[in-house]
Image (cartoon, rainbow, N blue to C red; front, side, top):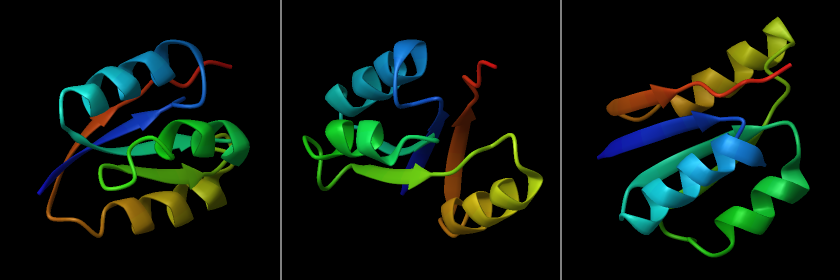
Length: 83
């Protein structure tokens, strides 16, 4: 299974990209700091979307997050982090 990883998926361009991919039938790992905002997106795609609430400005959280996300065989990474 190919999973697309979208960072910044809780709002703005990242959310729009994640939603477009989900609407197209893709499996998406949605990564952002706000669990509430992620949950408001993934609840509409329970079999396709996966929420990962991590602060990617923190190196420790990056390691934890991507160890969980990269447990899958194949992935495509889309980075939309905006600080």
